[in-house]
Length: 190
Image (cartoon, rainbow, N blue to C red; front, side, top):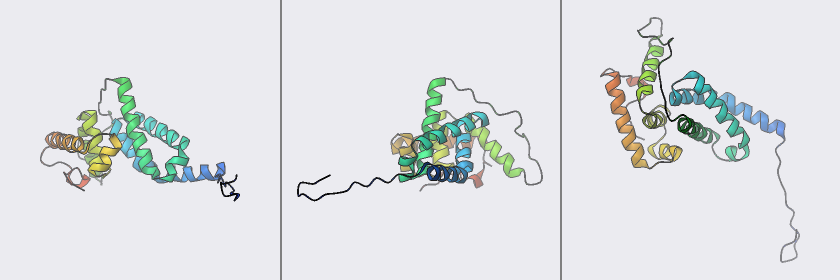
């Protein structure tokens, strides 16, 4: 290719071999599956649907891996998770959430208190409307700022603030005064 000055320029295209790309993506999946799986579960409220959502999100991220890895692949995949959940909700238009039968109803000894508290929080989250649940999960359990949450969900910062406030008030009412303070569901700001 020549430029207007008569100097020949050579176009160099970097191609990542598929094996390296696959290995890089596999390492990403191993490093993020626990965190993203937890987010998917909180967004769906159902372990089977959460696993499906996570797999679909990884597939979409893999298909756009060149673009995703150029930025922040974790943020990209979280956005895909959130959008995938919204898409699923729109398809269903009616959501009936219920706690799985195997969730414990009482305190159990031997360190299972934390597990029971997470289950209690999960039940309270499932009782929230879908939009409030998404905002509360991204804002307070994932730890995104108000601006990051707004960008993830495609809404304004004001919407995030008001939705989070209403969602936290409903959570506090559902959990009572002795709610899960250690889980980060406080009204903390970033």
